[in-house]
Image 1 (cartoon, rainbow, N blue to C red):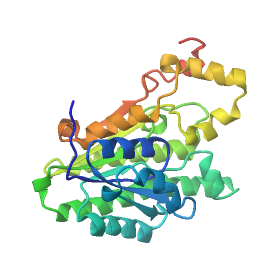
Image 2: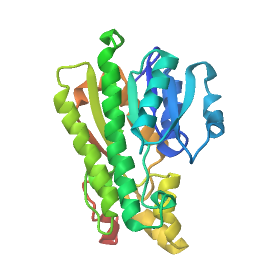
Image 3: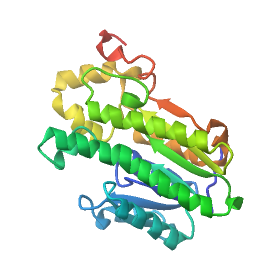
Length: 272
């Protein structure tokens, strides 16, 4: 399917690595103007330079702290001022069970930060984006709001999955359905994607780094298709949702886990 996003402006949060960086690349390849965010106080603008080099005339990078409504407002405002509009928001930025530990040694504080960033931050970004697109003329096609949830919390439950992590991803799935219900008559399409075990730095630090060589081999073999999902595979799903072809899926919370969501017990069954 030929997807041409020329003339469309996309904002990808958490755009420097993993699924975010892969999504930035496929959007640029499809002709979109792409604004990406980096984690304020954690990542730097210099870290965005390799991606910005893909298409310097239609890319920009912006700091974002999802714990701060002021930072969220400033980010959306900068993108709108720079490019004149925002047509697509991909809410990809989040913290995981390992990355949240950089914020505090206290478990209760970690859980609060997890919910503040993953759930409330996604809510505030979505709300601010909707305010923006409702002011824009609809002659450039439907606006697209695409949330990243997870198979854990967004689709299924898994033993020993961190409670605040699963809660935050369940909240994103609910937010997606609720916003879709409220916009069946507008020029906004809303979706969520729930990836499974994906080959990213976040999954490496939260899961794989804790396994020995034999444990890692057994874990990977137990996964659906006996492998991790690659970020580019998820990015291609997001590209389709960002296109004009996706409106029929408005409101969908998509299980992109290669079957882990429908067979969550596969990890402990002892066979593929």
